[in-house]
Image (tube, rainbow, N blue to C red; front, side, top):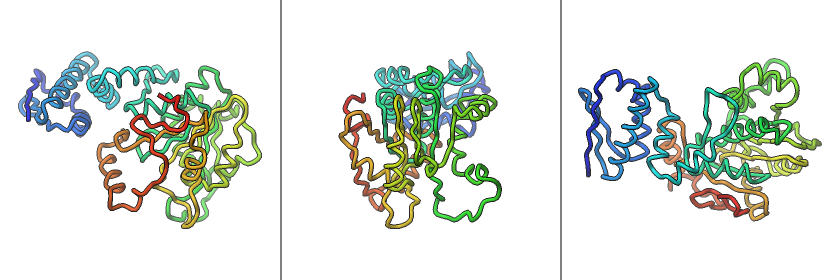
Amino acid sequence: MSESTLTLSDPQLALQLFGPQDNNLRLVRNQLGVAITHRSGQIRISGPADSVRLATEILERLKDKVVRQGKIGPEEVGDALAHATGPRAAMAHEKSELAIGNAGRRIRPRTEGQAAYVDAIRQHDMTFCIGPAGCGKTYLAVATAVEALKTKSIRKIVLVRPAVEAGESLGYLPGDLQEKLNPYLRPLLDAINEMVDFDQVKFLREQDVIEVIPLAYMRGRTLNQAFVILDEAQNATVAQMKMFLTRMGEGSKIVVSGDITQVDLPPGVTSGLRDAVQRLNGIPGISFIRLNENDIVRHPLVRKIVAAYDGPSSSLASDKTPSTGRNGSTGDHGTP
C-alpha cells in the first residue's frame, strides 16, 4: 500500500475539483481502485502504489484545469484518466474524436472498447454492437451518423427502434400516430438533440434528412446514401431483423445496437439480435463489437449494478453470442 498527499491552496478549488456530489472524485476512485479523502485543504490518496501515482497525476492535472478555466466536468475527468492510464489508449481516443460541428461540445470515446466501436463504424458498412446499459452504444452511433452527415458522406440519417414495451403494458396512448410513437423513439431524439441545435433538428426532420421511425415501418423501403441505426435491437424478432438488414441500399451504413440481457419480447420468441450475431458472424464487411461493464460511462453505480445482475448466479450470464476479446471485434478482422 502507498499514500500520497495533494495540497489545495484555495478551499474553493475543492468544490470545483470534486464536482457535484463528489462525482469527479468517484470517477477517479472507481477507475483506479484508490481511496481519496479530503480534510483542511489536504487531499489524501491511498492504495496500490501504481494506482496512487496515477491518481495523483490525474488530480494534479485536473487541479490545473480548474485554475485555468474555473470548472471541469466528467468529460475532462475521462480524458485525464485516458491520458494517464496509457499513451496508446489516449492516442486511440484522440484519433476517434467525432467532428459534429458543435463548438461547445467535443465528443470522443472514453474507453478502448468505445474507440474500437467508433473505428468499426467508420471502417465497415454494417456494425453490430452488443453491450450493457450505459456504455454509449446509441450515443456514439448517433454521433458518428451526425459526423457522416456533416462530411456529406451520406444524405440522411434514419433512426429506428422496435415499439416494444419494457415488461409492462402502457395501454392505448392518446394523440395522433407520432404522439403514440414518441415514447418509444424519445431516447434517439434525446441523443441527437444533444449534438444538433433543436431548430436545426426540426428543420432537418421537416426536410426528411433526419427520420425517426419504428421498426415496423421499414418494410418495403430501400435506403440509399443513408446512415441507419437500429437501437434496442434485442427487441426485434428474427423476421424483423432480416427485413431491416435487407433495406440497405447503395452507399449506406447500418449500425445495430442492443443489450441481449434486456430482451422484452414475449417468452419463446427468439431475439433477432442474438440470432443475427450467430448467423452473420464471419461475413466480410460486417463488424461485431462487444462492450462490457468496463465501458459503462454513466453513474459509477451502473457498472456495479450490471455486474451484480450479470454475475454467475444470474440466468442472464449464459449468453452464447460470439466473444470479441478486449478490442471488441470479430468477424471481419480489419477492426482495430
